[in-house]
Each structure stands twice: as structure tokens, then as C-alpha cells.
Image 1: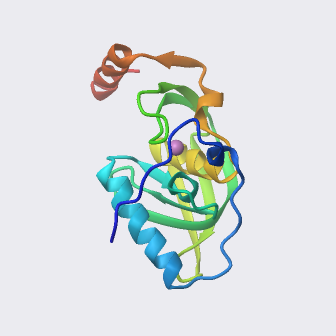
Image 2: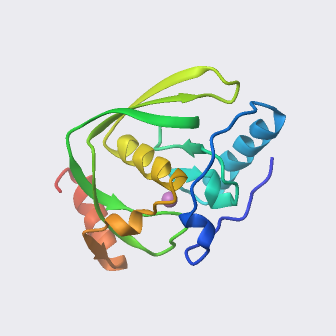
Length: 165
Ligand code: CO
């Protein structure tokens, strides 16, 4: 268990494509354990391996209902559209509105190399798309339709909690 350094905006590695995992070994398990710890420590909803300097198609996601580990994920189904607030642990202080599919279905492997399927709606669909983008060297900033400053983020979250939008 260890907390790894999160790579921040400005580092070229964030724009590089990650390679698929071929070996489901102890090293992969270690990476996933460290990524869980790192995500939790940073209070993030997701983290891709490239963000800790590893160009492999691996991510962890936690939108409040437990940690999901995905290896070599692929989106196999999308539906709907939703605009919501999005941020990224590699872009501290950057927040903006991004349109994402409302629902996505993802096929992936777990840490043991077994096939898994994850379906996500809303925030989970958003996190799945965001992390898979990271694996293709794509960062969320390029999709932001409107940037929000700190005050606007607070207002947005308050309004959302009340059920409005
Ligand atoms: Co991110």
C-alpha cells in the first residue's frame, strides 16, 4: 500500500496513449492497490494509471458506492446525454461543464484477468468516460463548454443538492 504522486497538467505523459495490460500479475495488483489509496487520499472519483506515470489501460473509480477496478476497459454501449460539472485530479482548481453520455456499458477485465461488465448512469457514466479518455491521452479540459470558478462551483453544487440543476 502506497500513495503515488499524481501527475499534473503540463506533463506531456497525460497526452500519451496507454497500452493494454497483458500480464495479470502481482505487479498489476500492486498498481491497483496503490491507485485505490492514491484516489482515496486525493478524494477523487477516479484515477487512471497514466496519472501516476504508468501508460497502461488501468483505472479505478469510486463515485460513492465502492471502488471499481477496470483493466483494458472498452465502452460497448452508450445512450442519452447529460451536461454536468467535471474536474480531474491532474487539473487542480479546474472545473467546467462537460456533456457526456447519460448511460454507458463497459466491458473490461478485473485484476485477475476475468471478464467483467459495468453499467453506469450519471456520475458513474461520466467517470467511466473520463477515465477511458485518459487511457487515450485525452483530457477532460478539451471538452469543457463553460469553465466555472470556485464560487460558481459552490453555487452549482448547492443547487444540485437541492435537486435543481
Ligand atoms: Co482525470
